[in-house]
Every structure is written in C-alpha cells, then in structure tokens.
Length: 166
Length: 287
Ligand SMILES: Cc1cc2nc3c(=O)[nH]c(=O)nc-3n(C[C@H](O)[C@H](O)[C@H](O)COP(=O)(O)OP(=O)(O)OC[C@H]3O[C@@H](n4cnc5c(N)ncnc54)[C@H](O)[C@@H]3O)c2cc1C
Ligand code: FES
Ligand code: FES
Image (cartoon, rainbow over all chains, first blue to last red; front, side, top):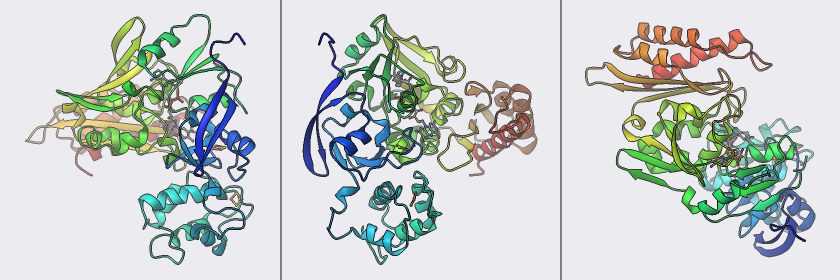
C-alpha cells in the first residue's frame, strides 16, 4: 500500500451503549455500517440523499441522516438506533406500544426513524401541540399510513398521554 | 447510489486543512455538514478524489462578539444559528431564517459556511446574510481575505472562491444585525427548499422615517441577490403603503426569474412581489 492516506478507517464508536471497533471503507455510508457490519437492520436506507428520513438515527443525542455520513464520521460518537428502544423479545418502549395501539404503521419501513424522530421531539418538548408533532414528523416520509395515526400515536405518548414516554 | 472511492482526510487544524486543499492535481472537496455534498456524491454528481473533513477543526466553530461585529465560525450548525442566545439577540434575522431550513435532522449537521459555499439560489442563510451586509472571511495557504457577501455568489451553486480557499467565518455588523427585519418564504412542503424567499431590514428613526433599508431575494435567478432599487424606494419614507408599492414595483422591474417545472415566470414574479410586500410589512412593525 503506497497510498499515504488509506481508504479504510479503524473505527471506534459506541452503538446502543455497546463499544464497537471495526476497520471500514471510508466511503461506506453510516447507514450501511449499521446494517451490514453491526447487523442493526432496523435503520432503513431509502433515498440515500437526505430526503426520506428512513435512515434517521441519534448521533450524540441529535437526530441525523445516517445516509449523509461517511463511516469515519462516526469515530468517537454515541449512536442510538431503534434497536435501543427494545431488543428482540423485550417489552416494547411506550412509544412503540402507542404506535401499535394507534395503527401508526403498516409496512413498517418508515417506523424506526419515525420513532426516533418522535422521541427526539418529546425529549425537548414533552407536551407538543398536534401542529408541532406534524412539523417534526414532516422530516420523515410514510407511504402507507397517511400520517394521522402516527400523529395520534405521538400525541398519546406525550406527557399525560396513555403511553407517556417522557 | 453509493459514493465513488475517495481519500479521506481528517485534519485537526485549519492550517493542515488549507495545506490539503492546496494539493495540486487532485480534486479536493471540503466536507462540513455534508447535507449538500454527500447527496451529490451518493448520486455521483460529484466525485472528488480527496475529502477534507472539517468537523474536527475547533477554530471553525464559535460565536464571537468583537466590537461592533459578530463573527460566526463557518462550522456553526443551523440548529445553533437558530438557538444561540448571542445570534438570537444580535442577528435575529439570521436565527429566524435558519429555522426555515429543511428539518431538524438536516439542521443538526448543516453549517453556515457550507450553506454559503454551496450557493443554492434559495438558501435562507445566503439571503439573510445579504440583507445583513455580511462579510465572508476566506482563507487559503496564500493568506486571508474578506469578501463582501454580494461578491461571493456567482450563479447557481457557484461562488467566486478559488479551489483551495475555505470560508473560515462570517462577520456581521451588530447595528445592522439588530435592525427590525422581515422574512417571508414560499415552499411547497414543510422542509423543502423555498421557491422564493424575501428578507428585509430597515433602520427607522424615532419619528418613524426609514433611514436605511436592505431587500434581498432568493429563488429569483441564479444567485440570491440584493435588490438595491427596492431598498432605495423605502429610504426616506415612513414605510406607508404607497412606499411599499414602489418598492415592490422596483422588485418587479429588477428581477427576471427563470421559469422551470416548479413555477412559471409569471408565478415566480408574482410570488417575489408578494413575499417582498410581506417581508417589508413585517419589518415595518406588522409583526
Ligand atoms: C432534505 C434536505 C433539505 C434541505 N433543505 C434546505 C433548505 O430548505 N434550505 C437550505 O438553505 N438548505 C437546505 N438543505 C441544505 C443544507 O442547508 C446544507 O446544510 C447546506 O446547503 C450545505 O451545508 P453543509 O455544511 O451541509 O455543507 P456540505 O454539504 O458539507 O458542503 C457543501 C459544499 O460547500 C463546500 N464547503 C463546505 N464548507 C465549506 C467551507 N467552510 N469553505 C468552503 N467550502 C465549503 C463543500 O466542499 C461542498 O462543495 C437541505 C438539505 C437536505 C438534505
Ligand atoms: S435514506 Fe437517508 S434520508 Fe432517505
Ligand atoms: S408504514 Fe409503510 S412507509 Fe410508513
């Protein structure tokens, strides 16, 4: 290898609380690292140019498009994906329960990112108005539900709702 | 839908970043928030040989007040521009404009310097920075220069920056920053790029006379631009309806928006006029 700056990167980051190390190609997108290398297939890749929101994860507690991050940009970061809400076979997170109760999903493609986007909203604004919920969720496209049930689910997860997750 | 191969560099100082950008014979691109560059790379509309990731360079962050100026580092994220107390207090137009950009997941990454360098014709921060008379601090291994914002943009997605130059910071004058402002934009959907944007500042004397004004528009041509004749139509008036009519007429005489599948020429002209009217009314106190 004569290349002075290699095209691979020795990555160290924390994913859902677990330290991870991996040698990755620098041009690999974070969403593909999560799915292919870490086996966390709850994070979906849709448009791969920032528009659909399906790949949204929490990076150091802030929502980001994981399709617009190169693998080495995860270096030293704390990543949270939908799998952090509840593992397989575990009790669902109240927000997930609410999505289920309100029929807030059909095919489920948009759901993981909808959950994380909603959680981010509820953390900073535990009692959002319906309009505030609509505005926040406008970052994520859903081709199935027509959105109303997702908004219902999030409203019911706000402080004082049946599925209060704040 | 995956980027072509590139070499990844992660300098931790501005000096190292500038040295990397000065490298000859390769196409090098700075990476800030990645919210415009990475989509282009994923679509292979951009295929740089080298990526210089600016995100570890602390010299590029920060909000500093220095005398009658506020200096914002190029790497300030849109979310910080929206919420930083100093920006909100001294540059309320800029904070207000930043809130209209995309969605929160875009704003947590996208940066001021990246937005200006990307030079989208309807970038909120570009239009607001024009209305605020910003100066852009640009550096290369050859030195530092100050570029008046009006001289930065050079057609759609183009700037007058040289290949090896970086935007380091943007400087705003506090007196102009604190003026009453107006801002109006039209986007088809929440979070979309705007079709048209208007930003206005006015300086009003105690007796209600308009002493100074700026009118900036986005989405009315290749670059965001100041509409000097519209601003001049307001100066010396009390921003009364006839004065606003004259300013709007000046906009209609000055711009020639390009028709595309998002809007005909007539529609874009009508929207530019309407948004200018709304922004002036807002600046004049109809807030
Ligand atoms: C879904 C979506 C919606 C969006 N909506 C809007 C919107 O409504 N309004 C809006 O204005 N923008 C919008 N954006 C774009 C967003 O604001 C970007 O953040 C911005 O255009 C570019 O900033 P960045 O920091 O992400 O730059 P990058 O993508 O990292 O870089 C963009 C370009 O600027 C260059 N560059 C970056 N930093 C510097 C620097 N300091 N000096 C010199 N060159 C530099 C890069 O080399 C590249 O050519 C949207 C983006 C997405 C994905
Ligand atoms: S896949 Fe990232 S936003 Fe669509
Ligand atoms: S449930 Fe199918 S895309 Fe939202």
